[in-house]
Length: 367
Figure 1 (cartoon, rainbow, N blue to C red):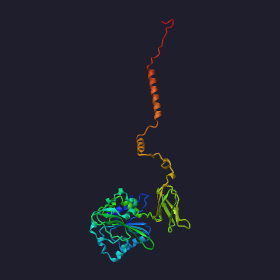
Figure 2: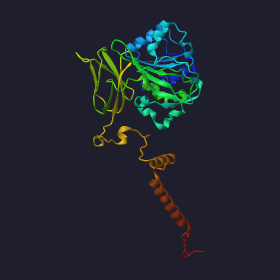
Figure 3: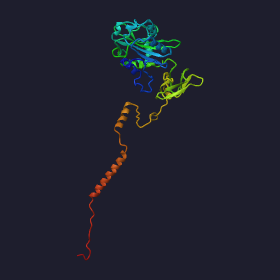
Figure 4: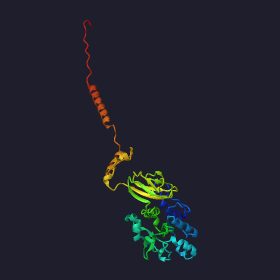
């Protein structure tokens, strides 16, 4: 991630990419903050406060040529300086943009976000009505024209012509294709409400993950071996759903890595020796319910502190019983109390009986 950490927008982006800030071992992204681009970066997120220099733009284009993904968040207001840039710098930057920056005073009016037709396919399940996309408001935008290959994912609507909010286009050389996602505002309250909207985090993470339509992503059933072709690395590491990591060496004479122990559902991540994500797989239970193997809850979660319930009411009953435990020795205590009562009754009856009389008979010759 590139950007000035003192900026509010950069902090919002960092938390969206990794809310736990490295504490969650199973988070699908490994986020590094810095100023340099490394060859192992599979995605680069940059909070752009200024137009990049020729060298900076060249480094970003080189990352695209390696197949990396760029997510560029542009500061509104930069459109005013575009015309004054040297032509060489413009030429270096232009492949990174979805179109030419546009001067539009209406871009500084309050607008609401809306899903564009191209966004329906790419964002997919993130467009849940509960997210209320129209609750995203923008106060300032960096308006872009749109080249023929650029797709608008989210747009803004208001009292003026719509302007793209989130765009996507691809570029690259030497047969490589890199994706560029353009966000034409900052996730900063003075520019927009994007940073606090529930769509921002999953959208940004999805942009950084490998494309689900490529061969590096799989969706398989439990028990199906995972396979990934990698002709460059001598070994890969796979991270399983419980966070454990297993090193998989390259097979002799081949380039296809295989991991067969897919016994648990969840996300499996292939990683290169440098830590970059090389592929991913979602392992799911069988679609045919008849093939499911049911296990007793004690076998899955052993221990005395586990509560199993088939409904909310049953769970409440278990919790009430745990809060008010019943004595375990009730029958024995009852027997002992009964014996004590019997003993008391018998003792009371015995105490009320008259004492036996002793009769003395005078003998002969007594005085």
